[in-house]
Length: 334
Image (cartoon, rainbow, N blue to C red):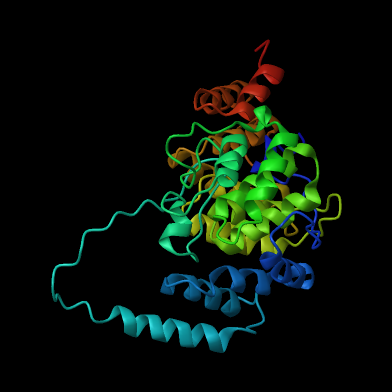
C-alpha cells in the first residue's frame, strides 16, 4: 500500500525549497533566502527563538541532549530558559489583571498558528485589515483555520480557484503588516496549482510569522524528496514533534506516518501504531487512515480488511476525504 493520498498540504505534498519568491513581500525575502542552506537545527531554532514559553527552549535542549542537534544555539537556549524562568517566578498576586481572551489554540486541517508570534499574529482576528487581505481571505482561507476571520466559511482545497487566490494573496503578502495567515493561504494556493517551490517558500514565511500549521506543512514537506525538496528526516521529526506539543491537528498522525513509512530510516510499526491511536483519541481523522492502512496490509498488526474498512469509515464520518476515498476503493465488496 502506498502512502495515503492527502488532499493538498496535509501530507508530503510535492513541495520544493525555492528561495526566490517573486510575489512575496520584500521585507520577508532576506529571511527566506537565508534559509536555503539551513540545517534542521537552524530551522527549529528560528521557529522558537522569539518564544516566551520555556518549554520551547527545553525542547531544543532535549534535541541537543539526544544528539539530534549539535548544540550551536545551546548557550542562547540556556540564557533564554534561565531568563524566562526568572520572569515567570514573580507569581505573587498584586492587583487583579484585566481579563484577556486567548484565541490562539491549535486547529484542524490544514492551517495552524505558532507560539513564536504576538497574540495578534496568532489569532489573526485583531490585526489590521485591508481590501487585499480580505480578498485573500475570501479566496483561500481554510475552513478550520482559527486565524481566519470568524465570519468567513473558508474554502476547501479542492474548491480553490488557484489563479484568483494566488493573485489576491500575492497582493496581501506585499503589505508590511500582512498577517501570517496570508502567507499560509498563498502557500495553499500555490500548492493546489502544483507550484510546490513557491508553496514551500510561502509556508516557511507563514511559519516564521507565527502560523503553527505552516510549521506542520514544512515538516511534512521535508519527509521525502520530491520536485526539488531535499528530504530532511531530522528537521521533519523535530518540527512534527513541536507541532504535536503545540497540539496542532494532524501532527500526531504525521508522526505515525513518519514511523510507518520509515522516513528516518527503519520503519517502527509499534511507534506508528501508538501515534495513530493518540491521534484518534484527539479526534484526528488521519489517525484512522494510517491505522487502517496498516490493518489492511497487515503491517505491524494482524491483517484484517474488515477492521480496516471500519476504521476508514470512522475517519470518513469525521469528514476525512482520504478515508472516504480509501473506503470507496477498497471496501466495496467486503
